[in-house]
Length: 442
Ligand code: 5AD
Ligand code: SF4
Image (cartoon, rainbow, N blue to C red):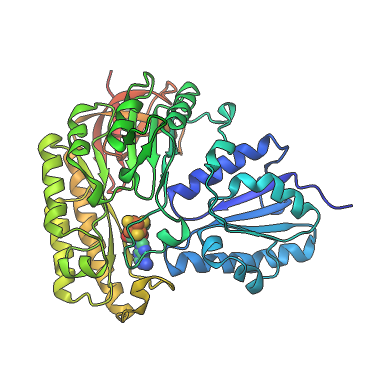
């Protein structure tokens, strides 16, 4: 007798898109009688949802698989699956490198999991890295009773056609595809009906969103946001990640028109040097980026800007790097993510001459110091003000709650009343550099 798969343990790495995919997988498997295991040992199937963006992230998969080899020796019935971007990029190779793997699935075929699980139950190995035309999320539908959250992600777009020379996403997530606005609105309504107050729209190039409807009309990102803002009980809307090339005037104007659209924008620039931006094939200059931000600030002066940076891209000199620091000083990011350049096989920049790691490490350190300085300054500026805070969860201590300002800063406060799901005025008293502390003002 083969063992039925009844419990899965899903471990997620990487971006919010992977987090969203994993949640949908777990929710949709419930109706097939498969539930979440609380740990690896109690599960019949371990799934790693993987990230391929940098070498370190991809290597983690193989070190985890090394651990699972021992578990499988103790429990030979245990199945192991690798899904996500490493699965898409490496396919069959994963099974060749690690024979304990039973299943390799790319990000677009998760809706096939119920059938695939049946194959695993009869000890078949499955590799599926297709790019089917159907929308996987229509089958991986929401399980409303399961949500019980204040904030939620909602994927509206996947893939990328920009082909930055350092990036694996166009290969692992495929071409840009937008989901139907009808289905997005339906899902947003379901989330809101279940208690969600804030939705973050997800896409690798979220502001490139464009869908041709039945009447051959294009619904673009601005149209979609306007539609979503009409949902009564939806209080806050955010989106991530945007590309500067798709920040058109309509979208900029929207920040002054839609109150529900939060004053926070994650807009990666990657480098402050035009020479490097060109080598990265970003398709925009520093001046173009700065102009977007200054137009946004005219419309919504208090808007918080966040970004992504890569240091040590091939050919980056000290002068180029200094220009990246200069951009930080001009924009004064409220927060930002920074990475050392990691050469990825199959991308155009893999062929370019990599620069020494100690230079990259030094630059990363300097950049992070600069980012942290402005992050702290942003938080300091909020001290003494009253902010509308959406309370998301309980804190570490009794009567403590954690929420976020419109600008995304985490806020910790005390309250005798359960405030989860409410937007309350909070006077900001202090900051520890990462989060703010405040008190509820009635
Ligand atoms: N090396 C380092 N960082 C990278 N990113 C993408 N590809 C690479 C790479 N090869 C960073 C970019 C992107 C973020 C999600 O990851 O900054 O915006
Ligand atoms: Fe990668 Fe560039 Fe596409 Fe962003 S825009 S996903 S960095 S290729």
